[in-house]
Length: 235
Ligand code: CA
Image (cartoon, rainbow, N blue to C red; front, side, top):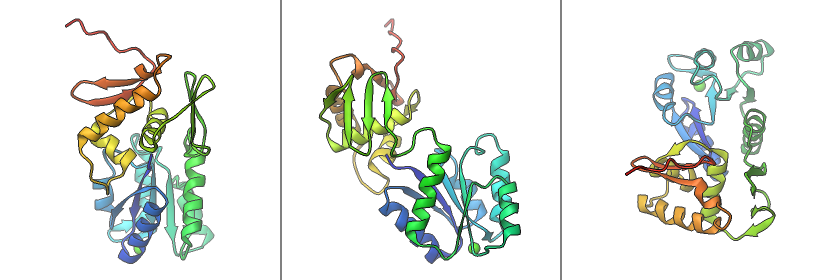
């Protein structure tokens, strides 16, 4: 499962370096070089975190942060400000705007990733490393283990990532394209049908005690991971 991170930075070499580091660390970076681009790229789906430069053409990052934190759809997206200033006054302004953390330039890739993971851990109920439990189905991302009621299951790497994504994004419908973006990554070319193949394998791997029914096909829309029974069609 790769989390989407919107990188808003006008200096191309820095933006590209950050994107590279994010991709290397299993994140899915989306780049924006100014506020308008950031606003255009923030929708559908919303990012899991925003890295926001302080000084941007057409406004400050902190003004954008304030705007996002006041909007009901974007207020829960964590924001890490990138700043060349270490001035305490500026940090106060940022925190007042609702910014979650700061990274002062120049920073090392290691520091950036550590801050991102710390913020995600703090704000999100299920972190990338946390064990997830869904009705007797347990997935441990660190040990790479899946079990149903204590019995270990054997899953392929793609099925494992797919299940992890589903278990941390339950009760929502995802299109094949969205699943490809989130589980396979945006830079990999695979056909939509590939999703169906892996869904079938996943269902088979977790079958036996009814858990396969959690992976639900939503006709014309995609797939949903849910403990609620599918409505029986009268047709
Ligand atoms: Ca800048």
